[in-house]
Figure: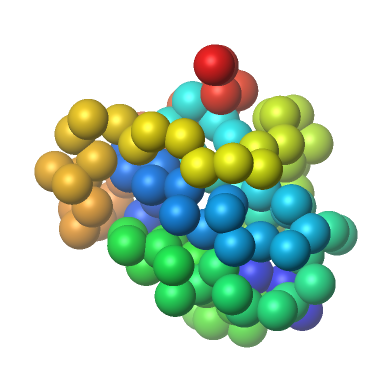
Length: 110
């Protein structure tokens, strides 16, 4: 099992989850984070840290559409081990549904 980041993260990217991950399995895109499924140890400490409730176990029905997307993007994006600054408008996007089409394939830039 693994945990999966879903579309709730898009345009929120709070990054609280990154700080608690014991195996540094988060990868950062321009407007979303993902979890590398082969690196996640299924500890679950990240799930309650996410203000957007974007992290779910892979057994959750919300995860099915995002498992392979997490794998694909984790291979292309840089690893992130420290919390950064979320987007200024993150709170405005937090509870909006249907954000999948807003996902940027671009990697995070410092």
